[in-house]
Structure formats: structure tokens, C-alpha cells
Image (cartoon, rainbow, N blue to C red; front, side):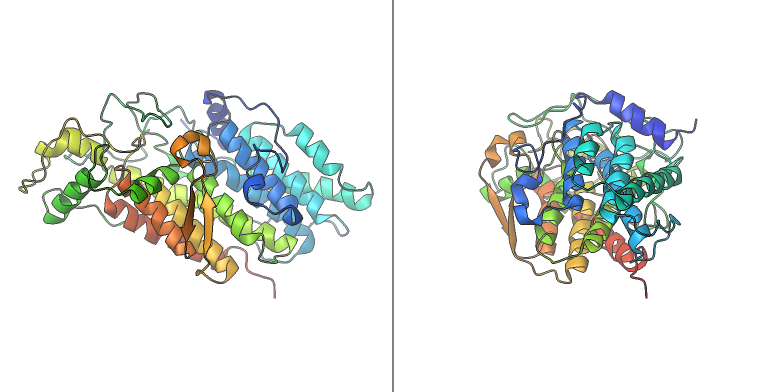
Length: 458
């Protein structure tokens, strides 16, 4: 059975445990993400609508891959509408030239809201009305509204039948062949939640087994940056990795430092908040607001960030279901005797629990690490430097009370991405190779997109 993008989004919205109220909190409200990081003088249509999308991710409790998908669509549509009028950049999608005299900011907002309405199955009716009231009536506004709607329709048609599938399906449907050896992924049940912190229901199938086959925005295919392979479970390398995660990533670890524990919680970004891709978008807002970018430059920047976050999810999920690798908790709690490793450290420990909840899908490679590397590399390319010292707080402190008032500091964007990736090792939910291979892929995705997707017109 083939599923359209519309069916995918409708079913995902229906399955959400929290229905959206239709209200987007304005900048300055505690529920607004930009209130935490954006200086009042830097408010503009791009940040306004990106914040609206991030709030929907939280309010609908979107999972990370769905969050990345739903943010990319409106960010791309908004930029393509504005760029159609201003004609500042080349674009490969054929959206076309907008009407002369149309207001590009109006077109951006209308296109963004129209695409976001489809992505989140949320009309944004009052948000659209309030946004348009900021602009004086006249031909420029009217043309901007009409072109914004037309551009959004073109983008939505382009993404119809893009391979997205219903979120509740959880069936492989022949997209990826399952492993038959001892490395095959399986949940270790009953599943559990940490306390305090987000809990997850018991599950028996992996989340989004078709995400890796969604049509990418900037990559040639979901497998373009696929990792070559995982460890041989009988190898010394695997034994070393097994022992490290067992000692470092467990709930009762005696070698994990307080700082490493804080890092694991800080970057956990579970599905009850802005999620990992949303956290990266928040960091982009924080960094790029003072870059002096023009409106169209900023619209392009967030289109590229949103699209590459979506492509990061496609790349990571292609790896996950192509390689079908078990999580550390499965290996440590149940599978160790079947792995055939002669090292005495590869031993079953039934009572072992990871420090943070293990996600409900295969391990190799890390989605977190792919999201972080893609975002850090893209922001560095836009900003024209990586060595930016900055600090940040968790955008959703309510998920982990231990993070209340915690501020972390980074000496560069790549430092931030590396810490984000290591958080999954400290939390006991990923192997080290999951992180290192994902960092490579995320950086490659961003570099290719930056150089080829929206080049400046000559």
C-alpha cells in the first residue's frame, strides 16, 4: 500500500496524545521559544514563524523525525515564496518568479503558514490574521498574499507522494530487510521510564521504519551518506565498546562524572518538548540573530537548516533500518551470551538500565548526532566561522527538573555538536560508532546543501 504525505501527516496528528489548541504564544510569553533567546530588537517574520512551528512540535508532542519533517516544509515554502519575488538565489525546485511589487515578507508569512497548516494539521487561522494585520492594505500586500499561497501550493504538490508514511504503522512493509544474526535490533521489555523525566510506553516495533525512504530535500537519496558497517560482535573493538557503555552509561555507573550526567540529560530532548532538531533550530536563532543577515538571507538560512535537519533524519533512519543494530541495553541485559565474543567483559547483566530512556528504534547510527552535526556545520557555513563561544540552557527544562537553572558553555559550534553526540554515550543508549559515523554524515549533508541548493544569483 502506498501512503501520501497528506495521509502521513493526518495520521500522525490523529495519533498525537495532545491535540493542538490553535494558539501560538507570542514572543515575550514564557511558552514562546524565542522569548528565551531572541533580543526584542531582532524580531522579524522569519523568527516569528519559526517559533510558531517549534511550539507546535512541543504542543503536539512530535517525535524527532516528524518534528524535522514538519519544520522543513514551511521553512522551505516561506523562503521560496520570498525568493520568488526578490530573485536573490537560484533554487532547484522550480517554484518560479513572483509578481513584481509583491511584499516578500507577506509572501513569506503566508507561504510558511499555509505549509505549516498542512504539516501540523493546524489552521493557524488567528496567527495568520494577526500577522497580516501588521502590514498596511494595498497592492503589495494583496500580491504577497496571493503569491504566498500559490508558492505554498507548489511546494506542497512537490512533496506529495514523497514516501512519508503513517506514524502509527510501525511495520517494515518490505522497505528494509531485517537482520537474522545476534546483532538484530529488538526492544528489551518491559520498557521503562526514568523518574523524574519523560516516560515512554511499552513497544514492540520500531518507530518510523520508512523514514529513510522519504524523498530528501538536498541529498540525492536517503542512502547517500550511509555508514559502511558496524562492529563484528566477536571483535576486540566490540568488547571494548560493550564494556565502556556498560560501565559509563548505566543508571548505577560509578565512573560517569556529574558533568557527563548533566550532558546526558541536557541533550536528551525527548518527544515531550522541542526535540533534538528543534533544539538545534533554537541554537541557530540564538547564533544568527546578531549576524546582520538581511531578511532574505535569514529566510534562506533557516530554509537550509530546516531542510538539512529533515535530511539528517532521513539519513539516520536509513542507517538505522538498513543496519538493524541492537541498542546497548539489549546487548547488556539480554543478548551478551549470543554475541560470540570471547572477551570475559562481554557478559550478561540482567539488571542493567541505561541512564536515560533508550529510544524505540535501532541504534546505528545516532539521530541526535546527525542532527547536531548537520546544524553546527550549516550554522558555521552561514556564519562563516566555527569558533563561536556561546552558552545555552535547555529549551524545555520542565522535562528534566535537574536542569532547572543549568547553563552550558561551548567554545565552538563543533564543540556543541560533539557534546550533543557524546550525550548519547553518557546516557547509555548508543554505541560510540553510532556517534562518530553520524557526525560524519551530518557534516557532509550540510556542506553539500550549502554549496548546491540555494546558490546566490550572479
